[in-house]
Image 1 (cartoon, rainbow, N blue to C red):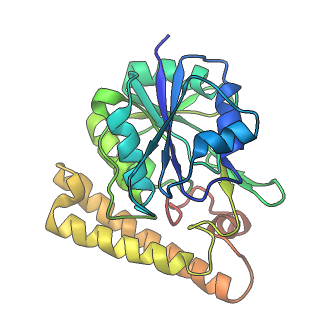
Image 2: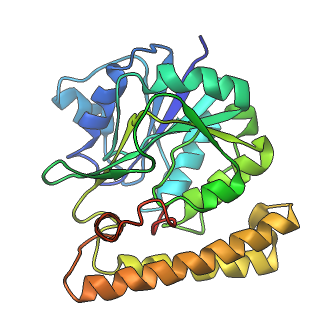
Length: 286
C-alpha cells in the first residue's frame, strides 16, 4: 500500500481540528502522515493533546505568517510532504473511514482520484446534497466534466504530478489547482460513495454575507489571469472553455446573491439544493 501525505491548513481552527484529526486516525488505510500547517501562530499539537489526540503520524508546520491563506498553507505542506500521494483536508471538514483505502488504488492507477463529496451544514448536521447521486462504482470526469460540477472536489494526487495551489486566490484556488491536475492526468476518477464531508460552517470564508462578492472578485481575477498568462494552463482550448465556465459561474453566483439578499437562502450550497442545480455549476470557492 502507498502512503498519503494529508495537508491540513489551520487558521483559527481550534474548535474543529480535533474532528478532522480524529477522522484520519479512524482511517482503515494506516499509511498516512498529516501535515498540520498553522497559519495563525497557534500550537495545534497542544490543541490536539488537549483533546486527547496524539499520533506520531501528525507533523506540525507553520506558514511563518498570519492569515497567508489556505493555498499558502497547503503549499507549505506540499513542500514538506514525504509520501507518494498528496491529499488536502480542510480543518473544519472530515474524511469517512474508508476514504484513503478507496482512493489510493485509483490515484496510483490514474495519477489522481476523488470521491462524491457530501455537503453538510455544520451547525445542525443537515445534509445539503452530494455532487452525484450516491452509489457504488466510479465515474470518470475530464476537464469539461469537472468545470460543470457544483461542489468542491478534494483531489488525491500523485506527489510528482501535484502542482502548487495558486496563492493569489482565496475562493477559487481549488478550481485552478484541479484544472492543472486534470491537464496533467487527462481524467479524474470519482468514487461515487460519499467519503469527504464538506462542512458549511457559519463564519467561514465561504458562508459570510460577502461570500458572493468575494467569489466574484476571484472569478474576475481568474479571467484576467487567463487573458494574461493562461492561469498556468498550457492548452489554449482548455483556457477558452475555462473562461466560458467562469462566466457561467459568475451568472449563477449573481443569482445566489439576489436570493441571499432577499433572505431566501444563507449559503450557496443551500441555494443550489433548493433550486435543484446542485450539479449545474461550480460554487463560490469550488
